[in-house]
Amino acid sequence: MGLFSRKKTTPAAPVAPAAGSVATLEAPVFDAGTTAVADVSGDYTIDVTHTRIGFSARHAMVTTVRGQFNDFEATAHVDAQNPALSRTEVRIKAASIDTRNADRDGHLRSGDFLDVEAYPEVVFTSTSVSRRDADTFTVLGDLTIKDVTRPVSVDFEVTGSARDPFGNLRVGFEGSTTINRKDWGLTWNAALETGGVLVSEKIKLEFDVSAIATPVEQV
Image 1: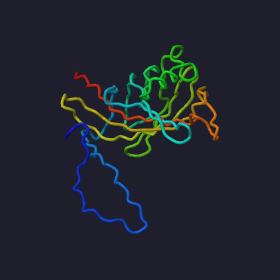
Image 2: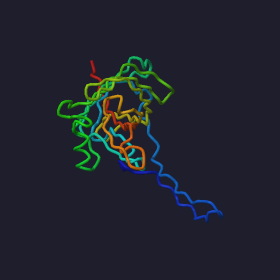
Image 3: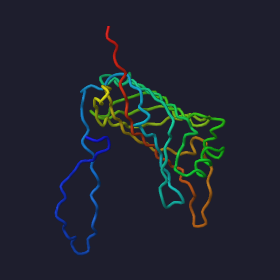
Image 4: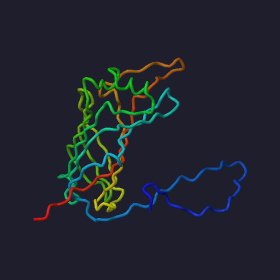
């Protein structure tokens, strides 16, 4: 199975839409996640090359701009039986922000937004972990942007576990949450003549995580 393969389906014979209806495209379906271990408890290091820490915001009230951070490190301890003992810390290099536009990225790095010269890191440190259901953990923690620290909550779904070709145990997690950037002092904006503002106050944070288990030393 390829690293980025999607589930293959046999195309059905085309069916003409009923009069007055609108034809829709079926969303692609990824291969189902695998399960290498029933209990994901253990210590983990985040695999940066297969992990995305991203965000999205509305621009000019009409479209969504997406970006990500390219330089970060994170560790986690997962206790599936007693989630309260779980913890994680994520440290992000603020200057690694990337929205695929050099001018916009430069503005985001400036004092109007992240002020990366004065505040080089964005940090998240968990304060509590609980289990919502068999596959979902709720992580509450402190998010520090610039000189402001505020609590946020993120629900992480365990998307599967697998042994990679190098013998590493990998566990996948996906999660997202929405914050108001003004709560962290990121207040810059520009009014539009038609009403509204250039950049939305609400920002969606997105986490697609591949975590590699730390091997347990044999005594």
